[in-house]
Image (cartoon, rainbow over all chains, first blue to last red; front, side, top):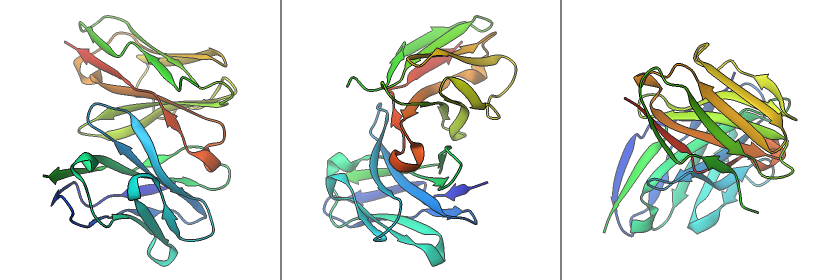
Length: 114
Length: 114
């Protein structure tokens, strides 16, 4: 079974700072990778996804993530954060073949200070 | 498309009462997932359906929880009897092909059992 680790539980940054949130997964086969965002009081929304091809994936709102297979990592980045990026961010993984379940990490709460 | 629709948005009930949560998936999505989100345990998959058939219910906590999908446009999650530890946000998600598109989440039902 697959699993996901997000080591940063709470990150606090000032506006315009650069962001990198860590995500590591555990699974022996080929995977699909996702980042979801949950704004306060709202549901999860898809930020970006990786299925194959270019390991650098660009998503909405200026976010990007890089899949590094050798490190089993899929870190989320943004060069300059805004106050509106305050939210909880979840990394998720599913096995590419024959498994429809998404396994989520425990999430990273991001607080942006104006 | 109206997205995944959940009702009610908020539910407060007394311990021992029956609670029914409802979900309408996006039309054409063959997969439906029920998740529970708590501070302590994060996002937990409870059960998922494919073409109205339950595929994996290994995440259902105990016999007090049951889920049904009588047709392609409606699913229920029932808790009977409810307990305070069931207090959480319950999300429904649907997908056409999870491996290709990920999930679309509903707005969730915040359940409080007092």
